[in-house]
Amino acid sequence: MADPHWLFGDQLGPGFLRPDARGGGPGRDSLVVMVEARSVFRRRRFHRAKAHLVLSAMRHRAAELGDRVRYVRADTYREGLREAVPTGPVTVHHPTSRAALALVNRLEQVRVLPARGFLVPHDAFASWADGREGHRLRQEDFYHWVRRTHGLLMDGEEPAGGRWNLDRDNREPPPAAASLGAPAPYRPREDDIDAEVRHDLDRWERAGEVSFVGRDGPRIFPATRREALAALRRFTGTRLAGFGPYEDAMLAGDPVMSHSLLSSSLNLGLLDPAECVERAEAAWRAGEAPLNSVEGFVRQVAGWREYVWQLYWHFGEDYRRRNALGHRAPLPEWFTELDADAVTARCLSTVLGQVRDTGWTHHIPRLMVLGSHALQQGWEPAALTDWFHRCFVDGYDWVMLPNVVGMSQYADGGRMTTKPYTSGGAYIDRMSDLCGPCAYRPGERSGERACPFTRGYWSFQHRHRALLAANPRTARAVSGLDRLADLDALLREERERGNRPP
Ligand code: SF4
Image (cartoon, rainbow, N blue to C red; front, side, top):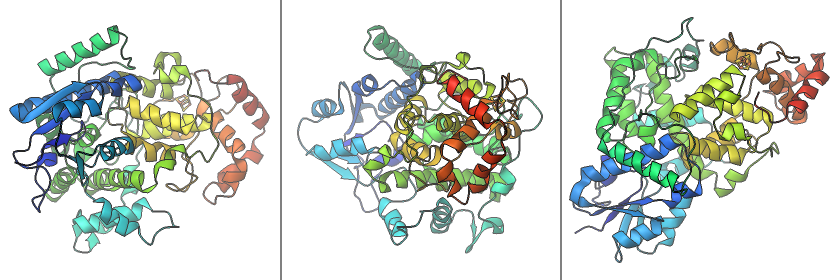
């Protein structure tokens, strides 16, 4: 009989229990061990919808596995494992965080198997990255390599359609309508397991054991493989076609637009990235979705998601402490409490409200509203990383560390991106319907109706003038400071505003 196999809460799909091609990995008859460790929720204040989703997914998986699983509710992982398998060897697939990897490496009885749930094995990435040290590991180069090695959207040696990158077709501002009018996304129906999870969360909160943030409305993200497959089918069958052109646009009344909403299912391990991109490609080959939409989705899953996963391990433990811009301001309470109603700036209030209500918002509000505001205000990158990790249903350490420290906050000094990503209100105005009814005007830098993003943008440029002037990608923008007649006024207003909600 094969050794018992431990499944973490983000290793829930069938792929994590399949023997590998060489007969290694968990056996078909292995006892499965799952540990629900309460200390995870005591240590950090998670979004309640996220806690609900993860616990629901774990308990649903245990119910599917029936007698084959030993499901332990314990204070810590170590205690839970000791209770489930007091002695003898246990296997586990490479966990997804450094903390969990350190834990399983400390436990003598545990043997760590290669990671699953990603297209690119660690050793293949290491070979690819070898020899590129000293240069930026460009996401675009990595993405081409993944497409080639996996034969994704390829026509022989060439990218399907002749171009690798169809971003040019995928940056449309939103249509002049309150909604994109896309077919509705898949929504699961809650069951008794969800009710039990909600009851437990209520009980723990009432006992003062744990505290959550955000609302835990009806669950809107898949918790089972069956639900996740239904969501994937709905997306590739009805929503993918309209995804590409508006993937960067924002609509106040339509936060979901044509986005796939599959990231939480991928990151729980319920879906395998290969099946997602293969289905998307099949939709294009069948003439059901245009190439720009399919390429945009493949880029997200096979490009960005894989890249971020690899960089998390490649950059090393110290990466989380990088703070190249010296940003040390604490996150204000209105932000950590997701108090959208305290915020006047319509874009920030709308997006913070989406996070409060669902634990999700798409990549542009994350980068160009939440992240951009934090960067302009000089909030501490490590605290912001932790916030994104706790408050998003798809947030995990490996996801958020490179995305926030590298991509969003430029705290790594440019290892991931060539410039800091931030903008004034003009970008948000062009890419959304948020500015029209806002109390502020996107074109005003100072004065009562000054847009906090426009004022914050120039204030950021001023604060980091020397660094930005030395970067060819930002030198022109920073030189614009010299033409601002109201620079002193806007800097004074920015100082006086402090950390109050904008
Ligand atoms: Fe946001 Fe400024 Fe537009 Fe208001 S005017 S919605 S604060 S970008």
